[in-house]
Length: 85
Image (cartoon, rainbow, N blue to C red; front, side, top):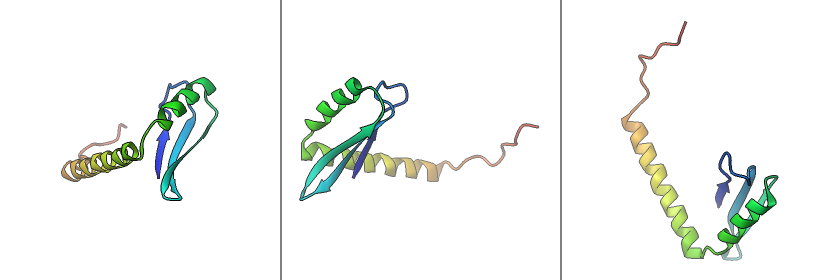
């Protein structure tokens, strides 16, 4: 499943789209209370994505997650920070 959330400040906010697998293909579902015009424009764009596009989005997301995990493992938070009095 792929979940796409409208960004803060976006007129479609709050809105979320889901790509999910059903009957061997991707289905698109969305819900929210933001601007119908803005969410409709996003829907039109998302409907143009091919199965290959969606698969590529999943692969790229997993790559970014792996890079962030590796970075965080190599750069633990500093323990020398003291809270303000």
